[in-house]
Structure formats: structure tokens, C-alpha cells
Image (cartoon, rainbow, N blue to C red; front, side, top):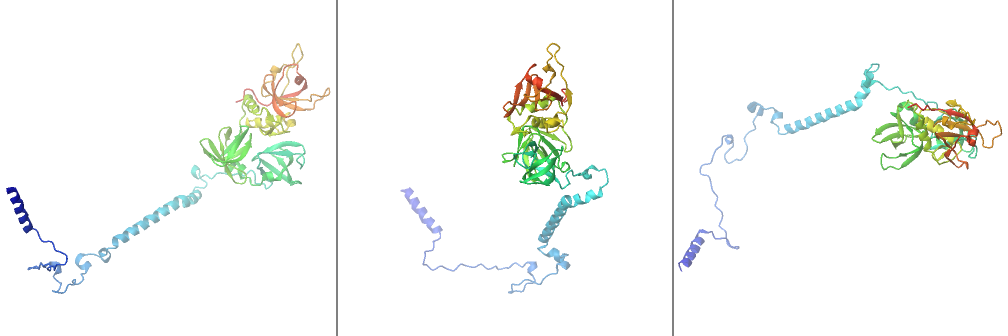
Length: 417
């Protein structure tokens, strides 16, 4: 009972202390406004007139505070910041222009004639300024005896090889001369007159293809094929990366070639002579290749064509033709066996080149019919009897091949390299 009385009392008194919330629709009494009995007078408002809420007269900031007109303005900092940024940008632009544009043009002239290596201008001697020079644009182009496709094939010229243009001819052929003096006819469409891809002094690296063939691609990796080039093709490069070179191509294009199976040289260097075993190793890569008269690529080869490209990449300059190769190196005359009188084949060393007469030769016939390369004692790289491929053939003392030997030429030293 007491507990209920307390609740009632507390509820009664609590209602007395709370304000009554206004009900919508009732008249509200106006709020009271407090007035200051003693208004505060601030010193800097002393010049304001009573009842007139206006600011006082303007002050002279220079006389009273010692500030100039620019210092008194609120926009001074922003203007100074913009000006500083403009000056910094102009200085940066001038610096960049000086480093990349002005200095490269001014400094070489100031140091011309001095021995300062940084400013020594490279000497460029153009080898192919003569307007009659042309460069080959196909992988291997047949050099024909007449301006006809069914004429005798004299040799082949390779991609990016320089030749000398002589005259126009019929059937789309033109007459040319190779750098080693062969004269014949090639398709005019296979030649270009832009020689920059073969000029030594405008490039950084000289590359010689030592594999039977290499692919030139559009990109360093995952590119598409531009050209398949053959052994002894000479290319020039300006960029070298890990495993690849960027090479210059006829017509001003660029391509990428892998560094494996490629010999890197200075742009005016020549390959050094190595031992005969390297020559033999290169020859063996052509075993069972298709035979083409005077061909010198993996797509169609002859023994003299294989000898030419394999000798060149291993440091020996040699003619392209079988007749010219029969005069190369030194002649080897094997001694006959004292008992049998037959040639001892052990005296024919790997790398020696044999020139043979026809198997149907007449007595005393010394005309060269074919040739072969000794790859091992008793083994020759030569044309197959069916004249369809170039392959290996074994021989021994007393074979008919020994009777057909006209001369043996040794072009590589077994001790070189």
C-alpha cells in the first residue's frame, strides 16, 4: 500500500516539474526577448554612430600599420604561388630543352677537333654509294646464264647480299655481277636500290648466319615470320638484347633474329679461320638435302654450294663454282701403297675436297665431273648416284672413286682454331 502511494506521489510531483507540451491549434505566447541593461562598448566600434549600424571610416593601412597595398590584399599569396609555379615550370622546360636539344647541337661544335672521346664524330664511309648497287631481297636467288628460267643455273645469291646492276634484260630479268665476279641474270623484282641495310658504318653489329637457316621475325618473341634466311647470309644489327638482335632489312624495315646459330662480328671484321672439323660439322648439316644445280641453301644444295657457304662462315674465302674451288687451298697428292700401288685413303683427311672425273670417263680424261668432301676417313659427302640428294658415301682403297680422283685440295688446316 505504501509502495503504491509513493508511485502516485512521485507521478504527481513529476508532472508539476515538466513543461506542458503545446497542442496543435492552441495559441502560443510570444517568446520573451532579453535586453542588455548595460551594453558593452568596444573600443574599435567607438566611431559608430548610435542607432546607425555602419562601419567607421576607412583607415590608411600604410600610415597606421605600415603595410603596402599589395601586402594588405588577400590575393597576394595566391598570386605569388601562381607566379612561383610558372617560374618553376619555365625553368624545368628550359633545362629539358637544354639537355635533349641544345647541348647535343652545341657541344659537338665546341669540341670538334679535340681528342675528347665523347664528342668524336664517327667516320662513316659508305661502301655502296654507286647508284648501280643493288641488294637481294629473297632468301636465295638463282643466278642464270641467260634471262630465262630454264637456262643453266650458275650459282645463287643470298638475302641482303650486294650485287652490281649492269643492264636491264627481257622477261623481267636484269644482268648483274656478284662481288666475287660472277656475271649472270636474276629476276629484277628480287633487287632493291636502298643499300642502308648492308652499309657497315651505319650499324653496330655484323651477323653471319651459321645455321642451315634462321627465321627473321616481326617481334623479339611471339612474332610472325618475315623471312627465312640461309647459311652465310650477312645481316647488320643495331640493338642487342638477351638472346636476340634487331636487324636492318632491305627497304628500311626491321626484324628480330635469335642469337643462336649466328656469328657476331665488328661491322668491318671478317670471320677467323678455324680448324677443318668445324668446316666438316657445317657440311654435315646438309646431309640428305635436295639437290639443285649449283644450289647453296638447305632448300636446295649442291656439293660446291655447300662448300662455299660452309667455308665462308668458317673463315675461308672460296669461289662459288666447282671450277674455282678446284684451284683453292693447296693440292694434296696421296702416295700409293708400296705393295698394291693404290691410293692410301688414310692420307685424305676430313675437310679435304676431292674433284672427280666422270664414272664413264675415257682413258686420260681429266675433266672435272663432280666433287666430294671427306667428312671422315673412308666417308665422302657427295651427290647421290640418282642425282636427287647430297648424301654420305663410304669408300675404301681400290674403289672406282679412287681411280676417278683428278685432284685433292686442302683449304683448311687441321690445326687452325
